[in-house]
Length: 173
Image (cartoon, rainbow, N blue to C red; front, side, top):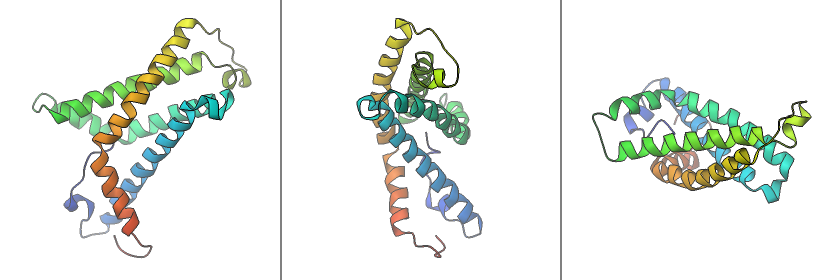
């Protein structure tokens, strides 16, 4: 859920605010990249093992809150536009909402069935088959939605990546 595509006018104003916007764009890009890598590792339970899987899941929950907080203005703006616009805006909003719900339920159910992380913190919960099934289902749904989410923001991702590739320290860009 990035802030959406930006235009050249908003990316490169003629004043010192250029650096502030670039810093925010840089933060969004690297946070999104970190979320993708952390999610990919967390989903690879066979590769990470249960303890790393659980701690990554908890970390993902924290990163998801940061991501949502950073993009809350986009959420409000887009939700208000839904009544006036259709098509792509509604689809993007729906995918982002489904992804948020799916990841939230996946992380929450993962915490509720924790076998390592919570016991290490002295918290023991009785896991039920309902929460295990919920965790598996929402993990699979999230696996479907993450690439759709990235594809919808592909132009922004490629544009920022190109700017990083062209960026040189000391250059005002």
